[in-house]
Image 1 (cartoon, chains in turn orange, cyan):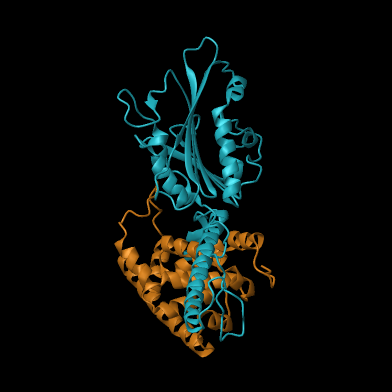
Image 2 (cartoon, chains in turn brown, blue; image 1 turned 180 degrees about the vertical axis):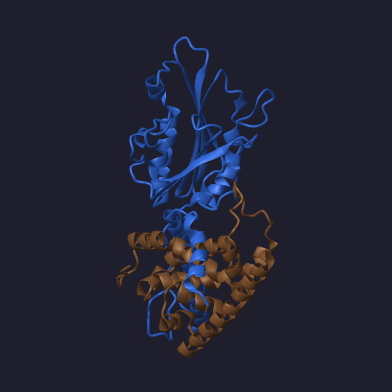
Length: 173
Length: 293
């Protein structure tokens, strides 16, 4: 979305918000593992984006600015501490969510076992379709570090997913 | 390893049905933070300036009382501002709109919220009794447009809705003018009741309320509770309209209920030996605090 040199106006912001909200929730969900938390963090990130819209106007990618902010919120230790104090029925729903399919459970479990930096790099590469240089800019790390994180993350993921598939196959036989 | 894009895509698809909060509410909350952040920055800057000014004044030679303080030792002779910087009013959000517990303080267990609206969309296509005519026609009372209008519609059934509205204005003067007009039109809605077929038994009672000091932070702070009733020829039932209007600075809260009945069965003020206090005046303090927060 084109952002001019001047401060972002409401029309530009609304267009960014409408086009990217769900996409960003999905990306943050893949990074942090919790859909409700991802939604809260993305919503908060957009509120901050409008508050600091001068920064948004000069950012190379406003969507990346929001994603970075949402991710930092999602991994915030303070936020995690507050979550642990919330009652278990915080997210009330009229109907229980559908049971996730086994493959989704497997990838979720596997991602949760990766170091946060590897997980984030994998999501940015495979889900957000960013190149290595773009990932390096977004996470603030050298390109070589990002390449290493991607390689190690893929190896670990392959090992974890194959293990899970082997366990399921054994149970069915 | 199979194509690693698929499992990630599968995870992301969970977000396809996530509710998207209204973007206007996001911008309102962002504006609110921006206003507070800038106000705090201005206050901090003034504190530093005042401290510097006081120190320089003491070090300077004794001056006559009618001379303004000199900023000796600085190249910029600009004197400190004599009053705090004026900042734009903080726009209200849905958090400032009266809740169903406030509108139905006796028992809200059967009440549900039917919708939340921005602008005058909540009233579109409706002609609310004892509401300003210009609202019913799609514009704004008071001579100046409200900068923010937020409405929560609620009740037991959609056929008999209650309205809780907050209107934000650019200045307290604009809000005060709007308040006066809203109260005036609620107090004399005979024409509207007559147009709705209720040409008999028109009565209207307006009760002003003082908002206790310390309840809200903005000024002026005032409230008025209006009850109007009309009935159709030959009918034993009347249509009753309760309206509560609260002003806190540049904001106005407006709560509206209309229903049929044979009697009002309550008193605007507490302490009556024969009647309980009416619901809206009973919730006045809570509604005022909600408006002001």
